[in-house]
Amino acid sequence: MSAANQLYIVTGASRGLGAALAQALLAPGNRLVCVARSPAPALQQAAAAAGVALDWHCQDLSQPEAGARWLQAVLEAVDTPPASATLVLNAGVIEPIVPVAGLRADTLVPHLMTNLATPMTMTAAFLAASERFGCPRKVLAISSGAARRPIEGWSAYCAGKAGLDMFMRSIHAEYAQAPAGREVRAVALAPGVIDTGMQSTIRGADFAQVQRFRDLKAQEQLASPDDVAHRIAAYLQRPDFGSTELDDIRNH
Image (tube, rainbow, N blue to C red; front, side):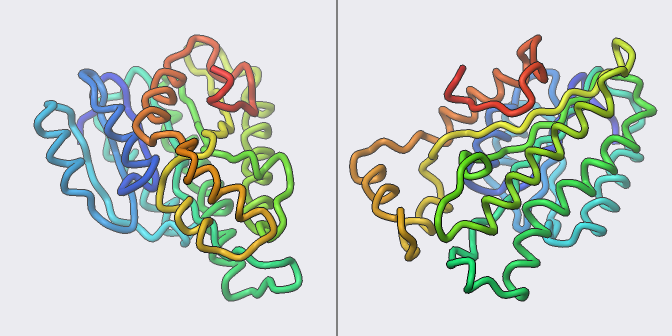
């Protein structure tokens, strides 16, 4: 596999914000590696029409070891070092939405594997395998306001996203002294409330604040995935990317 100037790896790219973000990154000079549980023919067709290299992979991202092995193999196959490499950790799940007393291992563990453990192991593989490129690297984790304030019934999601926030801060601390041109910048970015399938699941759930989310939909106050994706794509290009470890796209 050869690399174009800018390498982007996007997880959970088959639908919702991930699909919109992959679409927004279909620009000359970019090469995309996208991974999800299912294929996305329309995105692959759009990449071909735009003349942008896109490699699509189907992978179960609830399996941390398999996810890390996959990413390591992908990066080891890059034969021309890119000018920069970016890992976008977008894949995530919202369920189980239950009271704390209702948490069960059979649903909690896969949730935390997908939302926290796999992003951690994939980031480790990304940083280790891309070191040989000798280029600047970025890690962007799609976080949530739920990482920074509790929502009743969302204890699994809140805890996993809060863990991802702290993981980004840990990366930032470990690589703070990296030399110029080989720096690693990491950000946990909350994207706001977006009109995706996840929001549909939330509106159909039973928890204390559910009416607020139903009202946002009814009042057409949900952000468009395409709009948010283009703002995130621009955010990735900011020269000060990484200066704010925990950020919110609505601040920009």
